[in-house]
Length: 413
Image (tube, rainbow, N blue to C red):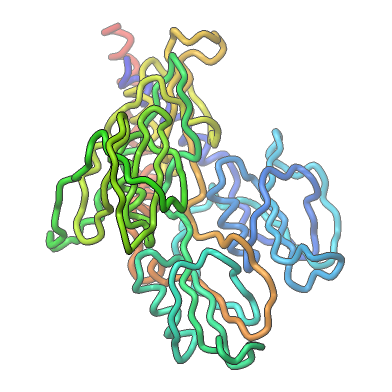
């Protein structure tokens, strides 16, 4: 029965892919007022559009261009959603550009942002600085540093001479992680199996290593960020993904991962239900935590959609097959609220680089790492291939054999 349900759900999702329209066109000096679900900063309208395409519920957007003069909202990107999927209102407005999500368009590359922005500062998010002769060398430094997602470089026009030619490398989270965790009886949560595969080189030269985590041990102090994590191994993965994390501690009861930065000392003390360790920078850690289903754990919010299924295995398979789903929560038939029983919630967060703030500033050049343009991450490549494969090959096969599978399922159940 589970195989049958997966086939029927995939067919439903595929039909939706073909029925929903791709609208790549941008509408200059047109506003879609209201219906905001999130406001972020973007350096241009194409970045804003891609952010909308990665947001779990965004259907359309409005971007406030740098020439906007009514107030200080330049570079604001408003992500929007309505029940109908269309803007509630459309008005003319100088200085803004509006458009639609590219979720239903094939061939988009979420990992490549080649544009460079003059007299624009990506304010904050610094983790490393150096001096370079020009912005191109700064961008090369960012591209070669696995922790760098974007940069700002101060040129000869910068007002303070002592900081000219300074290159600021900047970090934001680029891994798909649940923004929140909640203990909740009657549900189970887990991850898509395609987004967290080890990034091993094709020549097999990437060394594999074992996770070394100390039990009932705390590394106190020196916290710089606290984030939810489902296990100590997940916490170690997150510490390894952050360029300034030198060690971590994980509190099991609270499901909290404490990332720490200290190059001078590593204090240690015994503490029950706390697990600590160091990041891995030069070898691949096991990703067993990805394959585990976490009972009585909810990943609240960030739902793309939900479907009704009979078991969590089917929910995980559906999430893995969906090109947008990164993690999921499944509600058992015993859940206390009948309306939510047997629901499989597919979830997605933005993983593309999004600066904390974008402002106009003379003498500053900003841009993004070119890693996504030159050598896409395996999971990004897989998402693109998966989307084409599902929309074409799988669609034909499922339509061809779905009636046979349904007949077999009905006969055997």
